[in-house]
Length: 165
Picture 1 (tube, rainbow, N blue to C red):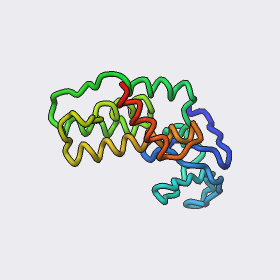
Picture 2 (picture 1 turned 90 degrees about the horizontal axis):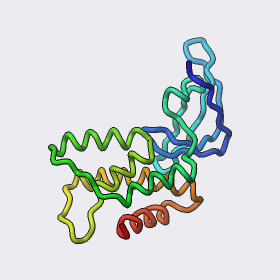
Picture 3 (picture 1 turned 135 degrees about the vertical axis):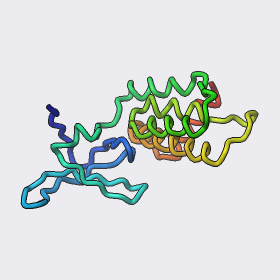
Picture 4 (picture 1 turned 30 degrees about the horizontal axis):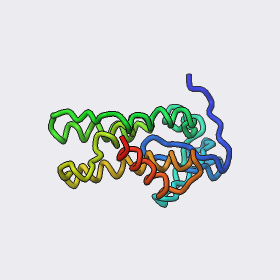
């Protein structure tokens, strides 16, 4: 039994595998002879529009932005010590990818923390940098939407938090 989720036009939402998007409207589409209500979500950075059936919004993981308190809890994870397990990169990469696509800011913050490198630390591989950038971008987009600041400022504040830790 899924509870009905309601969003308004102009509201920012988080879709787990794509990050922060904005509801640009609601449409009724006829598919295979039946009418279907869908949320139309614009992901400006990716130049992508996603249509999510209203009835499936909850089960698809579509959610409102985190509260400031939830985001602060996630950001506190950035200050912790990184817990990089000594398993093969391919296994860790799969785990990191799953955390990023979960849409949970605390899980994404763990990935950012674990993959962050200071100037004194050894270089990362290309795939580690890509994964770090993806996680940082996803976290920064939600942080920017919550704080009403631009993406660059949000990413810079996140990097500063980790450097200060």
